[in-house]
Image (cartoon, rainbow, N blue to C red; front, side, top):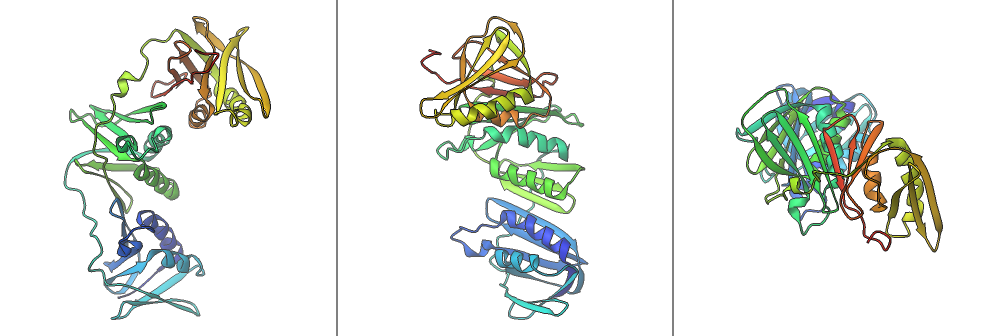
Length: 373
């Protein structure tokens, strides 16, 4: 096996392939990346049995072949080489000779026999979506995924399709995030699957790394999801289980509506969080003379209070307490300038939405305090 390729292309490809390499597995072979050269291409494959990645770059192939290379060491070696063309030659013992100008380095390779094959998904449900839309769907819902391993069905994002509407929903029991998008194609075929949060995070990171602006093709079976764009193929297992009925969580009627500049509330919440961090992250919201008062206090540090101009509609707003971390999470992930907070009492969930868009809904549970009982 012998080939040449450009260092920048290879380094970028390794960074992507590494996302599906396990460093802590009891199966050492999945700590490697599979290199295959044929037909003017170098293909890199990785598979940690939860997610798998395959991608190709251009190569000058002198002799076709395949070898396994230790991912961590390979990444370190390539990243420290000078820019330009790199030459690779693999002997009959799978020893890899790497040459750049006057630099020669070797790595121990392995035979490919026991490496888990990355199977392409059989035909199933599918749809195509713009990369930027997919990134926003992931970004605005993954913040609400549960980290509790005891409830595995909450460790991912529910993806639903009904006709041409695509919905991403996540909840950890304290808040719920729902984001919708309209697909260009209309199909009567619908589906509902739970995709692990790690898989969605890696997909988002790869799209960001590649600065990809085109169409992403998504395919689903009962057990797996695949995402394909450019020369990159990504596959992940699905989470099996019953996702909660999120429709029951979203309040249908709200008595009070407060319209506010997102940045004003974000800045005030950041300032209040310094004090809230020492008091179970609690901040309190209440109306004072048609302004929103945000307070946080702790006996050991002090207190913070801030008034913000808002527009209130509906009934008078009762004082309500929230976990400031959950408020900050959503405010940092909404792009619109104006948001609406709707409330229905001290102990009922609050709803945060962009003022001029109905494609994102964030439901957050209040905290019971001595003042809000």
